[in-house]
Image (cartoon, rainbow, N blue to C red; front, side):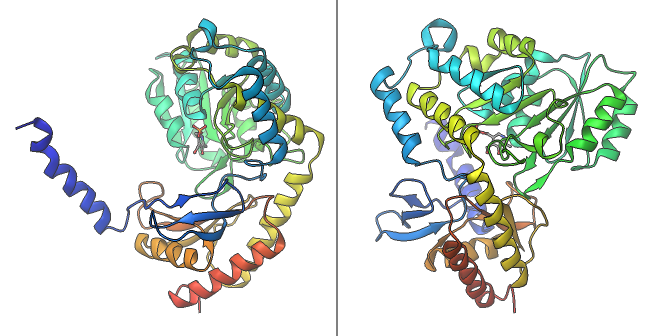
Length: 404
Ligand SMILES: Cc1ncc(COP(=O)(O)O)c(C=O)c1O
């Protein structure tokens, strides 16, 4: 008997346990372009439904924007589909270089380097810069990719309570005499709760104790801050955050790609030693062309991020007035807290029937007992879309006894 047959039962039991606990991640099938109005098959093969999307990372509504799509076509026509090479062999086109320069300028950093994803950027960054003489002190709610990146590095590790600069200060004081370099690691926006890391306070304690600061701004680049540069702009500390990692897979066009932006020396070290950079294929030309166009568009005007800000505020006010328990905050990530995983899944299913696409988030994506529907607003939403979503939330919320 093949070995897999012997262990198949174990895997089947694990799958069943996930189903029984209501934790199954039940995928829906989108049969249109990504956007606010999408067509969905659920389950696969059933009649397609036209629904409004309230759970994409498409914050600026650029995933299918005509100018972005046109730029991708131009990339495809002029430079082909793929590079068939890692960057350092024969995978670098002029447009990769242009994109890295434009991204660094947008983020307010000296230089930047492009990866296939931000997951890869986070997997690369720590191992190259730090070793057992150093310490990485991270917020306890950092993204999985930062956690994995830290795991790949031999530096010592510690953590501080979520968004708590006072606790961080205690940790830095403790490590000051025990480590060569200290680096604080945080998300700019915590994506499950939609709250901001207090970067002004964090920069102050980093300065006080002589620590570097790395921020993953994946849920902020393009729209947080007055001109959309990110959480460092929001808190007026653009020049005090040392390294930023971010994704092109959310507000910045939504395709794929990640960046590390920071001092030239850091970027050079990544180019020469970053394992996911050296051992993985280059970002395809159409994506590089389109991402460059995105940066051009959002550098010219703040119209989209302004609309997004208004949308998020309006939705939050309406949902609070309806009696929903929201995580307080000021970002376009607005979680509707439900607690029970099965309730969150049932709620999402009923919402789909009302024409609103949202998803229940449960363990291990959020802590056990803190299941929720994480809504995400987009600049692509109009007021009527938001009103329709709120009406559906109220109907389903009453039906399932979440609000009275
Ligand atoms: C905070 C954060 N960092 C990194 C990533 C990974 O980005 P990418 O999709 O580019 O790998 C994500 C995506 O979910 C994220 O939310």
